[in-house]
Image 1 (cartoon, rainbow, N blue to C red):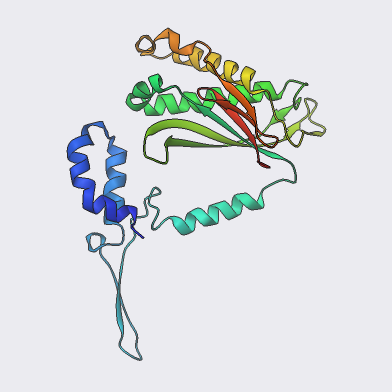
Image 2: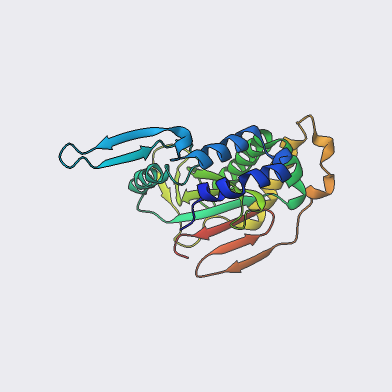
Length: 242
């Protein structure tokens, strides 16, 4: 199986020559680390068997958190730890995306845009979940940012793993949600857009973003074995049973 390190070693120089101007310093550092991982570039250790004198040379790992070669074991250990924390309640996958028109400013201001994406999407989900018609209390969630699609197109979006469980306003009891429903996705998308728009207007480069991008978009809602999906610009909610 071809590794990412092999791809970077073979094609990395040509890619950087063509697209290096659009890569951040951290991205360039990650490429270099992954390309050098477990190669002679990072040195290594020599192990010799005292009995048969067999010698093995082991190259050092890059220890970059983006490296799928040397960080695989750490990733699996993290997943096992998270799995042990799962509660005996329904879980939902909630996804928030940005329209394609907002990707250029996201590339230019990644720390700002990603922070706003996390903060406003989490606030929108929390606010709607507090409605008594849904969970009626404070929820918890685990969020993960993804910036690329499987075919390596730039597409920043946030996935939240949300248990259907909320702490009641009085803080004395837990409220368990339904097996196949979390919140209505259309008002969730509208609430997210409003919060994101307000947050962007507070930035120094707000004038670079056209106002029409924040208008409600056409969306489809479909049911898939007790799953609710809202695409493409605002949010989607899926049950873990799907």
